[in-house]
Amino acid sequence: MPAISVLIKPASSLCNMSCDYCFYCDEAEKRTQKSFGFMSQQTLKNVIRKTMLRAEGMISYAYQGGEPTLRGLDFFKQAVAFQKQYNKHHIAVHNALQTNGYLLDDTWCEFLKENQFLVGLSLDGTPQIHDSLRHDRKTGGATSKRVLKAARLMDDYGVDYNILTVVTSEIAENVADVYSYYREMGWHYQQYIACLDPLEEEHAKTSHGLTPELYGQFLIDLFYLWLQDLKKGKQPYIRQFENWVGLSAGYGAEACDQRGTCGIQNVVEADGSVYPCDFYMLDAYRLGNFNEDQLDAIDNRRKEIGFIERSHKLDEACKSCGYYRLCRGGCQRNRDFDAATGLYKNYFCESYKMFFEKYYDTLLQLKRI
Image 1 (cartoon, rainbow, N blue to C red):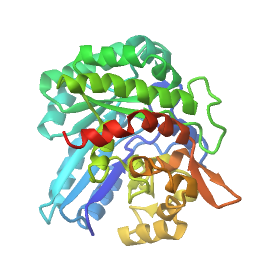
Image 2 (image 1 turned 90 degrees about the vertical axis):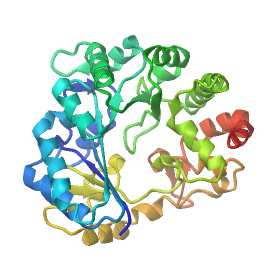
Image 3 (image 1 turned 30 degrees about the vertical axis):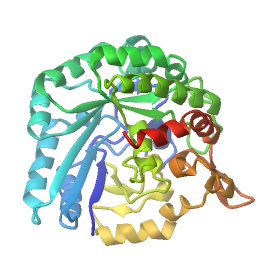
């Protein structure tokens, strides 16, 4: 078995923030059990043991939520200990943590640095925009100051981190201010993820949702700013753009939403249940449980439900599009099913067309730099 990817939710859907657009709150509400509480040490052991012993070459563990740090630092120390215990084949192990930063302190940062965790820090633009979207769960108050404190602490300890920003309408409409603020803060590694509409509901019906036109203009505006800095040799690393440049040069995309088809993921809820994707952690997509099932049985269930195969079913207009080489049809989570054809089309198709009509040739030129 090749490299294995595991995403673990140590605290299930529990969180100390309340974010207006949270996709996982939506998912949790649409399954039989909203939260599975905290992952036990025995479940953690089973997850790591059953994946570590099967991996070849490399394995990656990412911790997400909800808010994973609610589980406590000792849980993560135990995770590292289990990794060392079961690394019988001496493979490379990569750890990542996606966090809102609320609980990060000196002790956390010492651990993250010592164990070479890559941290994704969730932050949505300027403090004003951030605080309008991401609220303290207990008080309903602002959260940006504590998140910024976490960023400064990670800087002090030399922790590798990037800023993850959910592109809501508020972010899209203020992209120049956001980009300038990130530059001012010295954040050179950035990810921008389009805000997800509630699963299997109408698009852009929430106040923070995106229309294809707005998202397309966001991509154009952000790329322009990035390109100006690129010409000066001072551009930040923006994953989406870097992947498109790589694709134009004939390389594969690192980001799963830019590969065109879903990959093999093992997303683990706190009770040990496994799902094929973080965006589809619903009862119908449950593949098994690491407390009961071996990896082979989990992968067999993946084939039974045809999760990956479904992502191949793009409509012909998409596959024949001149921009398909780079677009690849976008993320499956943003695709809409056409019952008449049995195929899918991405909701943001027009967004990508807007962007590539303006910058496709530029991306092809950048591959030579």
